Image (cartoon, rainbow over all chains, first blue to last red):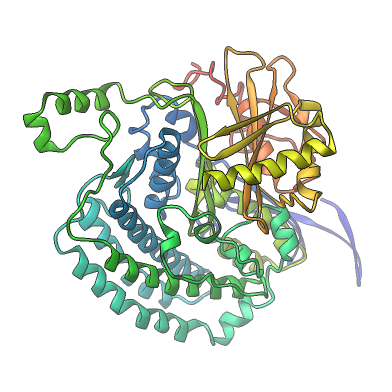
Length: 398
Length: 159
């Protein structure tokens, strides 16, 4: 508690706990707010309530086993987590993935981006008092989850992207289902925009709230839509392309206002760009072709081969008992997750288990900007700021 | 692609060497990534140079993490991943610290974004960062004993 000088005299500030069970904190985030009336004097986020030690657990698993753990970090972006982990292991191994598998990865990760932004939009609208948007957003998200279920057998914890390619061939009828979704979606995004973009309450709650200059954001290591809403057109898909993103034609939406409203506009525009990428990916993916690399001893052999070839059976057995051993060295792979730069750093000591796995979670690092954003604003604006940083506590705490 | 990465790396290494010949003790090229190994005492000055030299311009600190090379001494290896947004380049700075004296200069004065990253390393590896404004545990509860990401800490926890 400190004393502050105000127009009417000296007052004492009070400290208020927001969270860890507050609905607007999207999980178990606790923010210690020091308040002068309704104005925030300072904010201190307190995290770690969901710490599960995923990085430590990875050290005790073989390289292929650890994939299932990555799903559980950013649970709105499981395929993106699978992808960054597999890219890091593939880099460590020097393994080339077939083009067809790369395109399928792009297709799924972009659908994932749309579904993640839909959850963000729906929950953020609820935080701001617009209840109905959530129902619309989850209606469309359900369609994406059905696509994932068809591909992977799972709606959320997919573990579909594997080292060297994918777990399974794409299922029969996927193309029609994805096309139906892509044709339906633009009109649905127009619907959300009709509800929100020109809505005066929505604008009143978001415009001019949570401003940070691009220089401050870069200094705080912020990436993703938050940085792009400040006019910095940085996107790993363009700056450091992976998984053949350089072959796709899309734009990086940016705004210059750097407030909560600009972050909303950037995310909505990103959904439209993702649809463009999905459309191109559908055309690029051929019906026939490999879905994983030919790498004996690393990528599990075909079921049929195991029944006819001795070596295939031996490799199958070795992969699932002992694992494989990448040469000693380090690799750092990065992708653009819906929240920013998602990175995976792996150090190998030449044994079948990683020496160290580290995830650079964009939620964790972007949350650092919160105290700077809310300083001097109202409690209600804190809710808007937490919302537009778009944190997933599973990734913040890992 | 690999050649391009090498060309960029040579520029970075050349610039750093011409600034201070002691700053670069070794350069490792692996899988298209460049690691510059820096003496512990020169870490902050080198980071400052990487950020402020206009030819390098590494304005964003992407990640900081640690690898425990137990039982090799000095066992704790710090890795800083830097990004230059205008030049679209990446580099890794590395330095080693021993477990007997796990102290290193904080990079928060250079990149304020290092704050939580260094708190995480302090929390899980027990490295102290000199000049850090708020060095507290971040993920684990305050009374926790030990540093769980060190290799000699059992995965199932201490009982």
